[in-house]
Length: 414
Image (tube, rainbow, N blue to C red; front, side):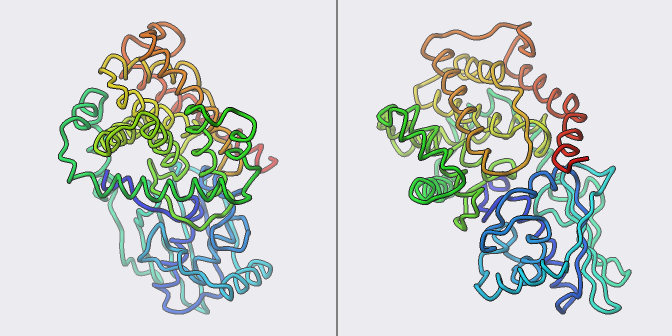
């Protein structure tokens, strides 16, 4: 949780590109004459249409890289663009118009891969990121390797080994038994930051206003509507370039908001104690991370589904749900909406979040309030929720590989 639930300013894929550019510029020691960035298809997909924060409303890989070189602070990692000024934005726009940064697709690499090359006269620096958004695995300056993380020895591999311990029952036991002082700072930061951007999304004019529209036309006295709308509003703002940070889950701000904001809203509805809310959010976040153990952070499988499943588990926990009832909630969600595809980060993510949460809350009502669940053999549903998670994860990681390629081809008009 300490590793995964961290603040990030802006959609994490363009931020990772900005981080790579900022680091390359820092190591170069002077501002480069040019940048070239080669990215995996999933990075391109998630940067193509999303507004880069603090860019003045601009989109694109070249914008993220250029802004990172102009004003990025590499030591701030996922908040690398937090100190951009007006003149920085103007300089970035001029450089983008002058084709300062070129972009290419890196083939035959893992789903999260960025290679950034910065050149100035006869000097050059190469920075590579892979596996997660801040995992810089290689730095090369003028042909000399300054940093090279061997496969299997990075901090990411260390964290992945902990993910192997995740299963539903241990996650529930941890939520029940953990000392509040050990998780309080992590969870309270998530509550504070994610609530703030949801409120900004409801105040401002971002995207097509999914969250605001839901509250306008649906019954805002219904906690189900408010839970979906607040998460959607946070995504409206984040995908629209809002510069407020959020606490992420599985490397994604949208998933961080989806997994937390509905639980916060339900806790208000039932007057849950602050400790109960913290424990419910611990469970919600861990159940979301558990699913990514099998799917991976980036794929053609929409992460809002995993996060919504986590949120519904947290809501079930607030209502005193047992292991069986929480398992029912997970199974019911995945049996319903396990097929939403990821076609990149953009304004429609807010609508997918709302739809995923609506289905997840219904799954909670079926699983906890009614005690009903889909049975083994119903599609991808297996004999228990753990195996259902594994079967959906296999479908997302292996079965949707060709889907991922075709989505990218369509988006790039190939």
